[in-house]
Length: 136
Image (cartoon, rainbow, N blue to C red; front, side, top):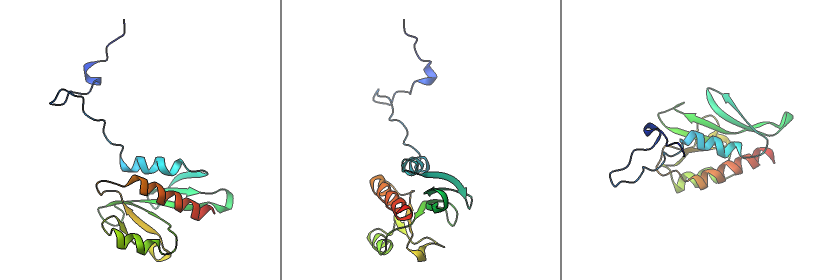
């Protein structure tokens, strides 16, 4: 006979009798998974934030930096972008994209992760493009 899970381990039924939906993965964990899925990536803390590096040997470069309340009360990440992409993305959706301090003058883009809903397909594309820029 199969053992029944303890009551505390089972989700409480919702008012309609259905189990609640599982909690969404936290944005930082999801970003981490996107970054670490790419080749030759390592995560280290830099400037007090999780930062992802790509490449090998002397060619290791930052391609994503988390910005968790570093300069304001927002959750975001910064990454390099191709020429012209920063201006285009900010013009398209200034609530989601911004010019980050320190690296924005070099074309990096800031992406807010505290907007609802986060466009994870777009995040994945931006991260993959940033990875390609620093490894190519």
